[in-house]
Image (tube, rainbow, N blue to C red; front, side, top):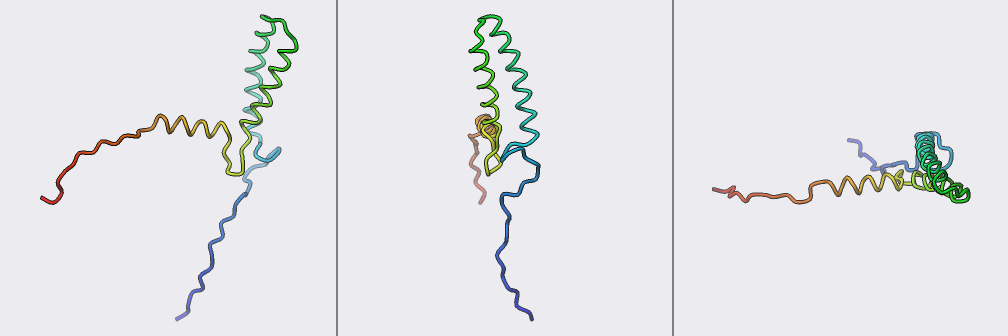
Length: 107
């Protein structure tokens, strides 16, 4: 009978399954950033027409773009800030109290 040699299980980590623009930021995140920028651009236009401050409008749109890129970029565990907030909201909505009735099983 042949004796099997136990070999450690090799689990590769850090494999990229999609083409990324830079680490953690791919086409999907770019599209989301573009949509956020369009919505923020509309809000920025309304604010500019109401306030009339050019510097505020430029800084506002730049902060929105930079913030959306930072929040959508995934780390080495493939989770972004937006994903983490979504997980926290899902957990907050989930059931946390389980009411059991005691039954005597050994009757």
